[in-house]
Image 1 (spheres, rainbow, N blue to C red):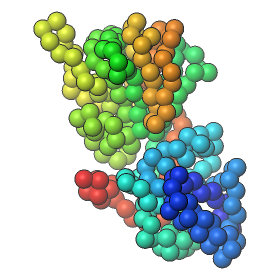
Image 2 (image 1 turned 90 degrees about the vertical axis):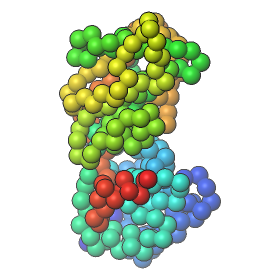
Image 3 (image 1 turned 90 degrees about the horizontal axis):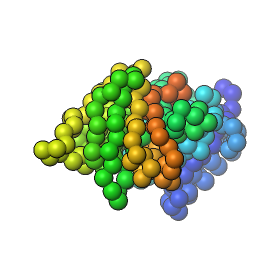
Image 4 (image 1 turned 135 degrees about the vertical axis):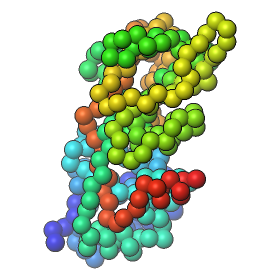
Length: 263
């Protein structure tokens, strides 16, 4: 078997770092695997879902050639396949089991049709403000849909449907469906303001545009990252990307089991 070219990305706590160092020693000394932080084939994420998201963004320019696998030491491990008690199993699986890859599309936001201003996320794009109410005109595939008045909007992927989207009363979307889900954040509803407050699940090739003066007062969040105020921005386009994140799966772990463990 050829040596595995790997990197380890850990949560910033002493326990996760300790596990990372121990795992690195085992893989390089006992199995002669190659630690390659710059251009790995597999990134081993030790922490929780937040750690995994940070690793994905750290290696965003190499997503075509990298697979991610998670070892859970944090508070939430929906994307992770192993716990801190499964290290021996993980090492065995890594060297003896066939790798099966699960791929999930990114979602991306483009500012003013400028392809040099693209922000990508695995979970969701959020647009809004916590200091003032925002009003956006929403167009889908260049057709006016509605005007929303709220603290903002969230557009999630299937993978992100169990994250912030769920907290916004959005629907959990079954694994394998390449869709987007549009939900409002704290919508305003009264006699002079109505919009569709139910979550809206959109097919893969939909393109959603947001217009309005409120963009000037809005921040754009992509996973755990955010921009500053969108000063001067007239339009934000959200769409599913052609780029995907690849997860290395070594053992059966059904999506239903992940959901049951989440709740």
